[in-house]
Image 1 (cartoon, rainbow, N blue to C red):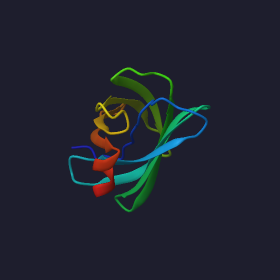
Image 2: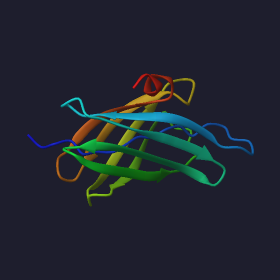
Image 3: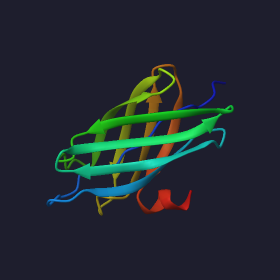
Length: 122
């Protein structure tokens, strides 16, 4: 079984005025490893980043998304500091700032993630 050195997450395109909205993100592997970070939606666009220790090595993953996309489910590309890449699929709750999703990397690595209030618990 592959180690999960994964990625992140994602957040919400909410209605934005002139400020940014940042929410916590937590990515959880099948082995229980947790990466933590944030997702920010702003007028200039959306971005997310997470980091965590896996097998003694720190891995960082990040990506961008269209902060004006109001779809319930969105897909975002992700790249990690160890060279892996893939996609994040995030589904938002009605609030637009809370939700969950799945990370899939091209090497077969998969992980779940939460963002918003649920991520603050990790």
